[in-house]
Image 1 (cartoon, rainbow, N blue to C red):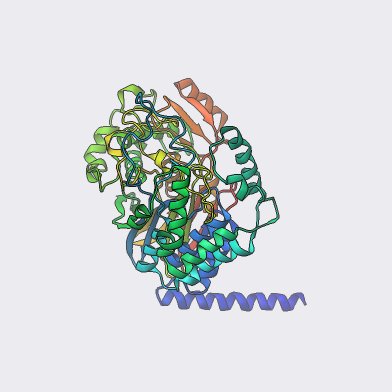
Image 2: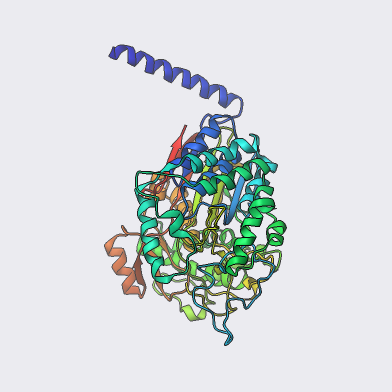
Length: 556
Ligand code: DON
């Protein structure tokens, strides 16, 4: 019997080898991979790829599944960015939310001109016009190969028939309900989610009905007709400002990705209204210019200090120059020009922290967004980050449509030059205007070599996203780590303000922590991000999902 099994195994290996050789000869890669934030999105993305769909098809199906099974961040009531490398070409689907038509610069200020606490974070006033459904529709029209209905169907099923709630999700919902009960700012949240219990089936019939309209009518199933009316009526009933006209006017946009040569690679990444692409290019290039000062030991004192110094400069630029490019002229190429970065990094020294006040201020935000990475057997890749901003967004469930609305309006600067509740600063570039997109840190990124996909990376985590992404690239390229090592090795983040604070994961060397404190840094040990990364080396894919989350990565 054992001999039989052995022969069968040998036979299978030979068949697989033949398959790989045939695919290689036809210019296709044999493998595909997914690195996803939960098992449902992972299994559905895989099934779509195995059905012959491409990476974009799998991404669209996964986005809708996450709207059902990952309510803290997955969504149809939020937005995001999808970076695509397909058939050798880059594309960037910007489905970021927009400010409603009735929004205005001072909408979060009281009559004395002070920012009203929490108004842009919780409740009916916090939401931008959702972009996710339009984004998936545009991605499908441009790049999809399978039928739209096939891609929405898995989400419909999971909403209608239910899914088994992961204990981490159940306890997160429980904590959120307890916390929000004191604030009294959510609408309908507990009514819709309190029954989601660990290891039990959880059905969402209203969400299923909304998803069915999207399945049948495409984009119009959300932005027009019954769903649009439900949203607009709900808004009016609660004093919100999003109308049917806002929904009808929403447009997802296809933009040219940022591209920069770095260390023998092409970094393909997110353009504005993401701040992240420019930020990681600046970070990687300034690291390249200054690394000889520090040596290369991973997560050493010098390494962390050097990258923190670079971070000060990156975040100063972010606060000043970045906003929605359709409203504000972002100096994209100037910010990543080598001469500029040389000048900017030349005064970094290894023994001294530069004075925060001498560098223009940066930003600080909070947690919950989600990211996934997909590579198909043709070597196409999708890197997708999507969000409703904080965990469970504004805490507002649209009654009758069964989905959570975002609190993305908080990513605008509520008052130019004044920190918001998270310590975020912003100016003219990111002030509120109707139809404008709020600045984002989401940074879906793909690393290419000779125009072939080498790495797909991204993370949630507000402004810490930018650190997670550039550190994942350094981990893979400079330190040759596996995908699991890349996502699980301790990361750190510095962003100018709060002054000289380095936030970091548990697991940094105790001696390094002491040495940084001695230099004058304050160390803040708190996890951030949830990375899902795919790496290609020598024709083989390697996928990793961060162990602290509930992600699932597979190569097949
Ligand atoms: O777009 C942004 O930068 C934020 N709204 C993202 C929020 C976020 O990542 C929170 N997550 N963990």
